Image 1 (tube, one colour):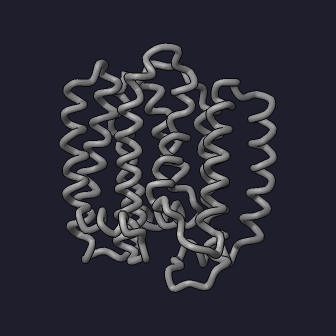
Image 2 (cartoon, one colour):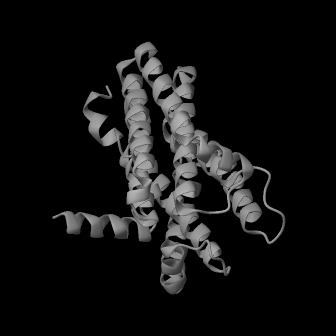
Length: 270
């Protein structure tokens, strides 16, 4: 049973399904916490857009010879044709839905995020000086913003209540990326290197402020969001304490799985 679960998690990672799963789950979680009715399509489209971005990023990474490439990069390089064919079809499907069916508010917000995503790909993958904005921070901002759009665009009043929860999620995404960079032994931005040296202290601070935010939250739904960030930060702390016993691949998979805590709190989000 354990071997089967590991194999599923391994393919979940190699097929770039990890980030889309987290994005769709938290998008639905935000909507449920705010007592919004959200059809399944916005979450699926978010997952699709996230998958396209991650596939593009990993394929572009695989075009360069580097000792920093990991198994996911080699996997995408070996199956580049299949990934490109699938991504091309799904991109056309996504574009059709966005242009013909998406709510105007969500379309406007997603347009800004899409531009930021394209700039991110250009800056990160150009063969020039490294970007001033750390890759981990850019990914966290982009990921959290895109995840929040389905709920944010449906709120007419009360956005100020959701905003802090989105910020906490962005911090969680950032420290998740910092942890992965630390465990995989890359060549990080100076600010990321500093954060990796103080990872446990930062995660502890996120957990502490999540606890306070949960106590002060204006609704039970938002309380569950802060509890989810608390649980995730605790899991990341535990992973870092055991990082010497696990392989970088196992740590990477576990770090993404640590963001699936809304699954345990969904029944209490309303």
